[in-house]
Image 1: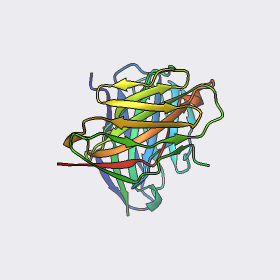
Image 2: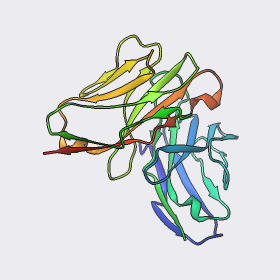
Image 3: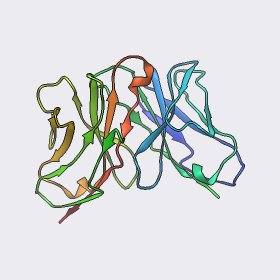
Image 4: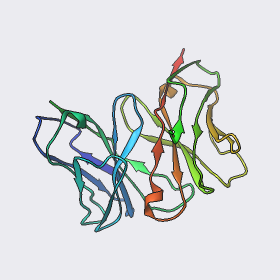
Length: 114
Length: 118
């Protein structure tokens, strides 16, 4: 299993440009998440999904959109990039059970908006 | 109020010694889970250890143990016999497990940067 994969690894955007961060998992997990990590900070939840066709906002959703058409894929869309969106973006997935079941993280996408 | 507080921005420890990384949390839920993740300089998030709020025994995973003090709402990570490869950022996180999908998200602290000296 590849686990959670993210593309691209690094991207530079100009202000106002748009892009899609890709996330794919091959563990048949129901739940998927997008986090952002700003320098020196912990991760903050942007959006999450409990299954195909179902998404919901997290703590910091403004400026982002998501879709979940399949179990495997959970892309994150930035429509009008702003310098405040410079961050490292992590995708994660889990079965969505309670207890010790943890989230599995992708390697991250580093985004720089200039 | 912050839900997860890590008061140590940075910690230093000598190789082979033990170190404790502090974490306090704030929740009114009865059912919750506490996690520790390691983030090395390469950037990936690595799950280390989990403690459930109803677990009576402190969790242990190899050299990692979690000192869970429920009344104090603390969940400190103890790393025994530190190794150079333990140098990394460590994050404490909480999952509140009342019900519904939204309660499966993790809330992270700001992290503690651990440096292991030879």
